[in-house]
Amino acid sequence: MHAVAPPRRTAALRTALLVLLAALAFGTSTGPARAAGGDVTWTVRTAANDYGQDRSSFGYAVNPGGAAEDALVVANRGTEPLSLAVYAADGFTTDMGRLDLLTEGKKSHSIGSWVQAGRKSVRIAPGKSAEIPFTVKVPRDAPPGDYVGGILTSLKQSDDTEGIAVDRRLGIRIKLRVSGALRPALAVEDVHVDYRGSAGPFARGDATVTYSLHNTGNALLSGTQKVTLTGPFGTLSTEAGRIAAPPELLPGERWKVTVPVHDVTPAFRLTAAVAVTPLVTDAAGSTTALDPVRTTAHGWAVPWALLLLLVLVLGAAAAAFVLVRRGRVRRARREEERVRAAVEQALRDKASR
Image (cartoon, rainbow, N blue to C red; front, side, top):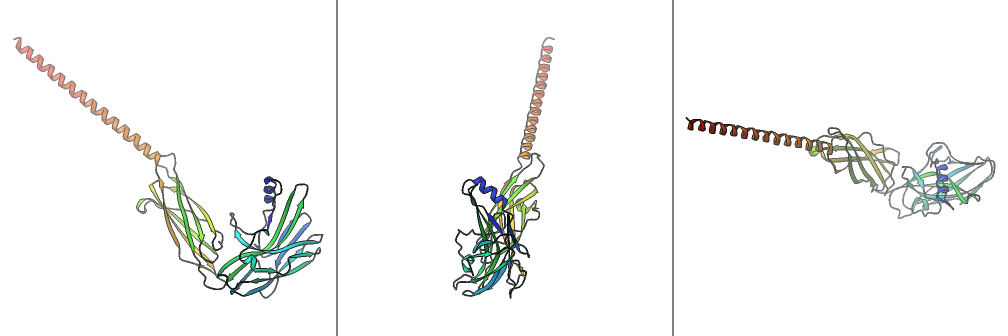
C-alpha cells in the first residue's frame, strides 16, 4: 500500500502530504492491507481459491500466450459507501529499497498492461466486501523471466481549501515468472575507493567503497556481499563488517551500495576487492546461490601526517649533520691556526738566539 499526494499549488504541500502518507506498503504481511483516512477505511486481501488461502501476494508461473485467473477481495471498514478505482501497474524498486507501483497516469509496459481486472471501479456499502476477479494474460512474444507489478484500489479526494488532491492507493503485489530460459546475471559496476586519514602520524583511517549492483539477467536477484581492502602485493588486509543485503532487484534495475571500512592502514595504494554472491529464487520458493561475481578497484591512501613527520625528522637530521660538520671544520681550523702559530713562535725563538 502506498499513498501519493500530487500538489496543485506548492512543493511544501506536496512534501507534507508525502510524509503523512508514506507509511503504506504492498502486500508485506499475511494479513489484509489497510488504508485509512478520516472516516474512510478499507482493506484488500487475496481471494481464497485453488492458489491458496491467506496469501501475502499473488504469484504465478505462466507460459507465453497463457493466462492465470485470480481475484482481489476489497472490504469497506468505514461508515459510508466507498467508491474505488481498480487498475494494475508495473512495479519498481525505490531508492529506499521498497517495492512501489507506477501511478495511474504512468504507462505500464509489462505486467501492469497484462492484468485485466473484471471491473475498473467498485462501489462497496459500509461493512460489506466485494470480490474483483482479474486475469493475467501473457503475450505470446513475452520474453521469459520475472516480472513484478500489482493490482490496486485507489481513492482520490480533493481539498478545495488547500488546493490539493490526495490519491490513496492500496494494492497487492503480483509476481509473475514467464516460462522459458532463466538467465540470472548480476554485474558489479562503478567501484570507487575513498580514504580519509587521521591527524595522528601512526594512526589508521577509514575508507568508503562504493559500487552499483546491476541486474543484467531476467530473474529477480538479491545477494550477499563481501568487501576487502589490501595494500601493495596483498598486504595489510582489512575486511569490511557485515553488509546489509540489497533489495530483490528486478531485471534491469541498479542498486547503489556504500560500504564503510574502518581501521585501514594508509598503505599509499589500496585495492578494493568486491565479491557478490547472487541469490535467485525458483518458482517453488527455494533460494539458490550462484557463482560469486568479483571485481577490484584501486584508490590512494597517502599517510600525509606520517610523511610530514618524516620530512621534519629528515630535516632535523640534515640540520644536525650540517651543524656537526661545521663544528668539526671550525675545530680543525682552530687547531691548524694553533699549530701554525706555535711553529711560527718556535721559529722566531730560534732566530733570536
